[in-house]
Image 1 (cartoon, rainbow, N blue to C red):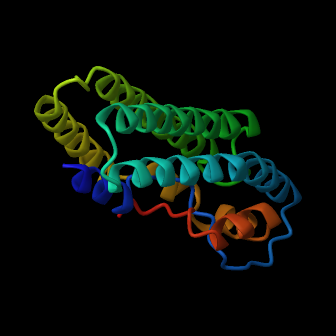
Image 2 (image 1 turned 60 degrees about the vertical axis):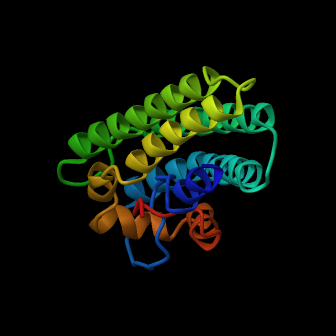
Length: 192
C-alpha cells in the first residue's frame, strides 16, 4: 500500500513547467523579460514540489506509523497545492507572452495550474480524513489516495506545453533560473 503511493509519486505525480535547456537567439526583449519574470518566480516552486515529493516518498517508503505517513502526506500535498497556485499566480502576473495567441496560452496554463492546485488540495483532504488508528482501514484509504495520485500523474499538460512552444520556450531556455530548474531534474512538463 505504501509502495503504491511511493510509486505514484516517483512515476511523475508532479507536473511542473518544462524549462528546457535548448538555447535560442531571440531578440524579443519583451518576451525575454516575460520569461525572466516567470522563470524567477517558478524556480522556488519547483524546488518546493520536489522537496514535498521527496518527503512523502521517504515516509511512505519506510514502514512508518500511519500517523506519520498521514502527516507527511498532508504537508506534502499542501505544499504541492500551494506551489501550483503560486506558479499560476506568477504566470497570471507576468501577463501574456509577446507571441501569437499569447493571452490564450497564458489563460490556459493558469487554469491548468490552478486545477492542479485544487486537485492536490483535495488529496490533502482525503489524506487528512484517513483513520490512522485502524491499520487496515488506513491502508485501504491510502490505497485510494494513491489511486487518485496515479490518475493525477497521468493528467495532461497540454496548456503548459502549448505555452512553452516556439519563441516562449527559447526565451525561457535563456534564463538562468530556468536553466537551473531543468538541471535539477525536477522540471519536466511530461507527467510520466
